[in-house]
Image 1: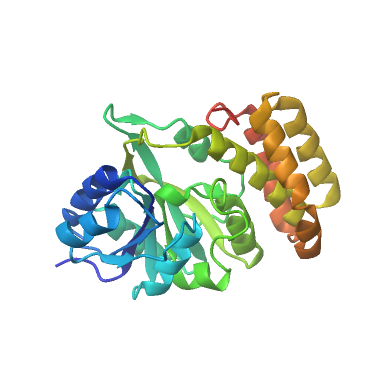
Image 2: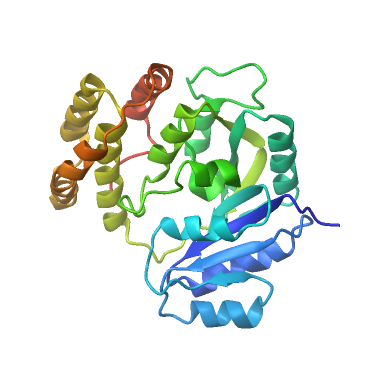
Length: 298
């Protein structure tokens, strides 16, 4: 019968074949979710192929590459209370979307559920999953899984209204670690985020990726988030730690330069999170220092 509670949101850029594979898998789901795709100015015929082969998909063509903000456009098009994000090279396992909607129905203080990620074609768990399971963030007993301080956009279902009320993804951050800022703003509004291992998303990493560019943006965005939302002592500590530990190469230098160039607007828009949210972020700092899954390399 399908499930009318959740819409799948996808952004894409020049990954026609990967996206078509993802849309094929989504079309097979028993939930029969509506799908909204934002094509971020692809030049490889992506939009034309989607329109031809998946006419039921809502296709948005903003005309230029919006990065993660393409998801904001797609969420505004959704007519369901929940949205499930996935990338153009990932897809949800049958039954996971219905389970995610059930959990969001059941727990009114829960804003998002992040799934277990299985890497294809080998079927192995992404290393980040173990960190999600071992999240040090304390949460209320009613949570359906470990409490999180952030989420992974490629593997998360969320309340559409809360996403939009918090402003969605930042246009300034564009793409790469963009989740951290939104997650902190949701937590500051009283929402809880959780990892639910019973939910699964499959990821077949595309070879069409700019790993160095993504590392630059990820490091830059980490620095911007730190100075936008963390208290001064925590911001200084995290900045110094990153300066000591990231690779000493041109990519890292570019990231720090870009971060410094944005300092005027960062200070102008700085709004420190409440103390209870900062406590969770401090607990995550040590986990991120030890992480083998999150490295600024590439």
